[in-house]
Length: 117
Image (cartoon, rainbow, N blue to C red; front, side, top):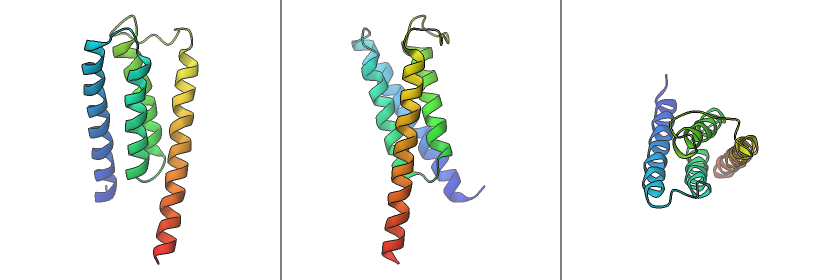
C-alpha cells in the first residue's frame, strides 16, 4: 500500500472519528433533533472529498455516516433499523451529496494540477 493511500485512509478515519465524537457530544445536549448530527457528518464528508484522492473513500465515508447515524442516534438506539420512515431518502441524499462533492473536488484538483504545470 503506497504512502498516499495510507495517509488518505488515516485522514478519513480520523475525520469520521471526530465527527462521531462531536455528534455524541451534540446528542447529549440536544437529543430530539438528529438532523443536525447529519450535518456534522456531511461536513466531514466534504473535507474528506477535498483532501483525499478518488471516489472510494468518499463512498465509504457516506455509507459509514449513514450507518453511524442510524445505529447511534436514531430510535431504537444501538440497533440498525433501516425501515424508519424517510431513511432511504437520507441514505440516498447523503450518497448523492458526497458523490457530487467528490467529483467536483477531483475535477478541480486535476484542473489545478494542469494549470500549475
